[in-house]
Image (tube, rainbow, N blue to C red; front, side, top):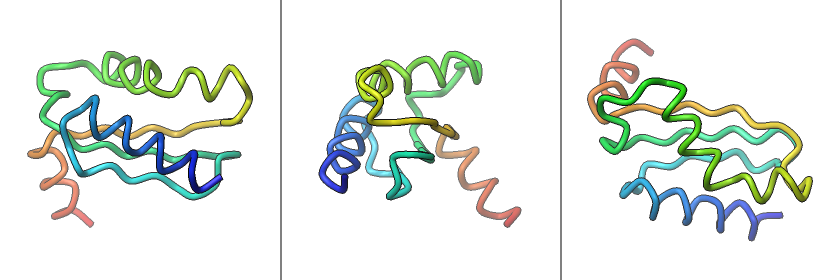
Length: 84
């Protein structure tokens, strides 16, 4: 399982040109957070679609059962961190 999580993380980092990818360890209820300026000027729906393009294979083969996705630009992430 950890190898799959590492592979997903690596693919997301590559696709969105960022090291700021956080993924939970369990594939049953996977949580993904990606922080990248790639999402600049994108709607939330467009951002989600881009993430799903990377993980669809894992969903269709039932490796991932459910997923929660959060996406941020770098500025949004900084604001989010200040709120917490």
